[in-house]
Image 1: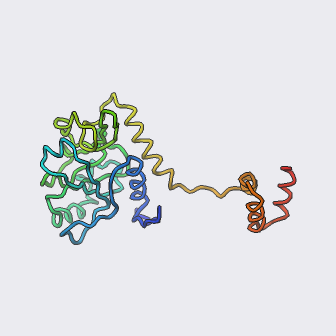
Image 2 (image 1 turned 120 degrees about the vertical axis):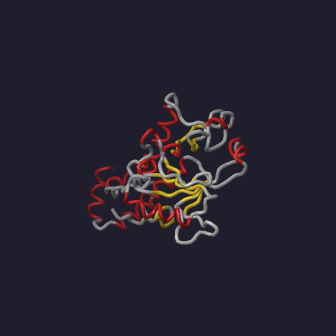
Image 3 (image 1 turned 180 degrees about the vertical axis):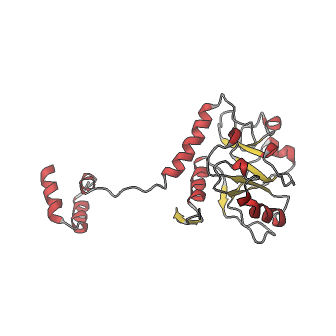
Amino acid sequence: MKAIPIVWKGMEFRSKLEARYYNHFKNLDWDFDYEPQVPGLFGYQPDFVIYPKRTKLIDYLGKVKPIYVEIKPLRDVTKIFEDPDYDNFKEKIYKNWNRENDLIVFGGKVFGRGQVSAVAICWQNNFPKHYGSYGIHYSLARGSNQQIGLSWNHAELYAKDDHTYPLDGAIGDNEKEAAEYIEQSWNNAWSQMRWKPKPTLDQKIQGVKTINEMIELVEKTEDPDLLLDIMDEKV
């Protein structure tokens, strides 16, 4: 299915799915940009970039790096390595992408196989050829913060005491509240963009609070007599 562009919040997105992730990342209070410029990259542009806050894990790895994000309409993002429809995309990445930049792919559902929510296409200077140890999970930073982030499969080994951002311990079965919050954020991200029916004349009248608003409503109504009849019934 061909993606349908959409203008949302004054921005032009290439698809509703990208706009939904924009809302979702906003709901999670992440620091990110849409369609970032990647230095030295030609012929391809990722959809988003996430800017991690400084954490003990990032200190362990040696430097703070942005996480670049691609959005693909896969029902299960873990199958991107198996799906021939994405062979051209992967070849483009292998050919043009700088290994020093991390790149992950989110799919069309908030959770995929094994609760994996994204898959690394480039991670720690490697190009994985299967999702295996390169699945990305949502995480819960425990402590006063309780911030939702991202976790690489083995990140919790180095970040148990961190309470700030992504790459903290993955959400376990006992963290149902956090998982529900993520799903609510995802659903809300879609609800914000859903078509809403125009209010009925009766609903418009109910919303009138001043004389000026009533005069404006009469002037805009195609059938003023019907409006006056409804108003008479209300009085």
